[in-house]
Amino acid sequence: MIMATITGENPNMSILQRLTTSDLPLVKEYGLPGVIGALLLAIVIPILLSSMFSKKVKKRAVQVDVGGEAGLAMRNSRFSSLIQVPWEGATTMAALFEMASKKYTQHRCLGTRKLISSEFIEAADGRKFEKLHLGEYQWNSYAEAFKRACNFASGLIKMGHQLDSRAAIFSDTRAEWIIAAQV
Image 1 (cartoon, one colour):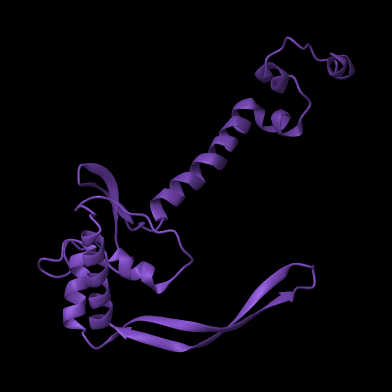
Image 2 (cartoon, rainbow, N blue to C red):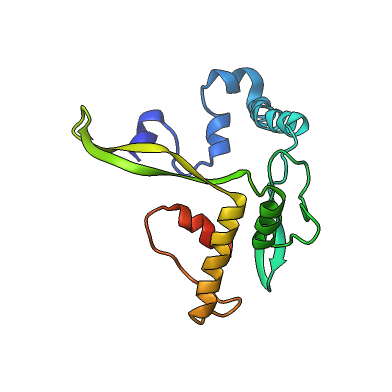
């Protein structure tokens, strides 16, 4: 109400009525339709140009039905389409790992490093960080990693774990996680 008395405007006027009766130089020079047209062009033209010249985005995932549950299948960004089966018969991660283990028996598969020592270092801002001193990598070949995965799976079966049931692992990050994930 105070604003209306200072500028001499009626608070019951619509925005369009206020614009047409205002002393704005743009409205006086180009009129209300000119100002609205310029605003529309300033918004619509960049949107049209960006949609016409934008790069085609690769599809990163597609909807799939896995085991009766909806999910997404991801792909490697180096490929333009989804890879259905990298090797004939390798339809699961376990089967893919088994086939890779047979093909690359002596290649390096999984590397770990032993902890030599650790120390806490204080940063300039007072935060403390743990600095780890690690040894050289000790590598398992694909054949060794596959044998460990088979041994882990056998242990689960011996303990009574059923096919298609789930298990959870709570531990610090370890190479054994990768082995267990192949079961």
